[in-house]
Structure formats: C-alpha cells, structure tokens
Length: 191
Image (cartoon, rainbow, N blue to C red):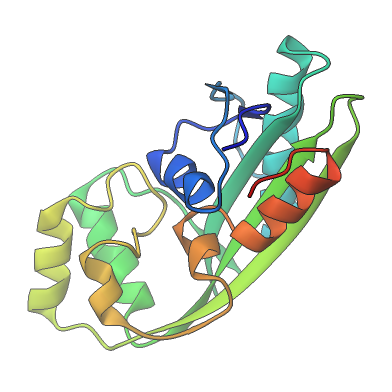
C-alpha cells in the first residue's frame, strides 16, 4: 500500500475506500474550515471550493507533502441538502427525497508536493423509491444519517435506491477513479 500522502478527512468511509484500491494515508488531518455556502453559489461550485479549501488548509500545515481532500453534497432540484440537526429535520429530508431523483456531487482535490492543486468533480444521479411513512420513521430512528448530509447509502438506505447512474464510491464520499488519477498525477501509485 502507498502511504506517502495525507488525507484531509476524518471519514472512516473515505479511508476504507482508499484502502480498497491500495492506498493508505500516512496520516489523517481533518480540515476545520468554514463550510458556509456563498450567496448565489451553485452546488457544483460549492463542493469543488470545499474540497480545494480543505486540501489547501492542510497543505499549508504540511508544505512539501501531498494532500488529498474531498467533499460531498446531495442536491435535490437546485438546493443542497444540509445536515439535519434533529430527527424532525431528517424526516423532512427523507420526504423530499422520496420517489425522486437527486444528484450526489463529490469533489476531490489533490495538492502535490510543489503546492499545485488539481480538482475533479463527480456527479451521480440516484433514483429513490417512494418511501412509506414507516420506512422514513425506521430510517430516522436508525440514526444512520447523523453526521452526514442526507444519508449514508452504504447502510439501510441502500435498500431504497432504485437506480444509480454514476459512481457508487462517489456517493459514499470519494469517487475512486478520480481520486486514483489525481494521486497518480501527484506521484502516488498503488498496486
């Protein structure tokens, strides 16, 4: 496994995905930055900016190191689905996603050893079944959604997804094709 980069994320899902393709960061350094969307900022612009800012924030602490960062948002219509702070808010999120198609946008950024940043965006379309009140109540009660925006597809919600067009790993939080290509471009190779 390759260990010569820093992961700017505390997400265990992102670490597991990287390990799946032969990468293991030598350290993990979450980027604590302001994640407030700017007025009029499109979801794709926002998620790319977040990945870039996270990578640059960590890169500034570890100059000369390769840093990988990522950010994921769920977009329903033109609106970013924000992290629910309560069961009532999550119930509304699930009602909004029920029976609809939505997009999951994940941006990946790698800052190379010379400080040059490269960003890639992955967009995946997801069609969710129409959820019953009982299904929504059970999902909200599971608390799988705590700490993420919308849901975790790798949990029980996966049983509600009718169709995915795009990258499953991107929906989990790190599109592996884009991440691997960016790491290779920075000189980090796996098996």
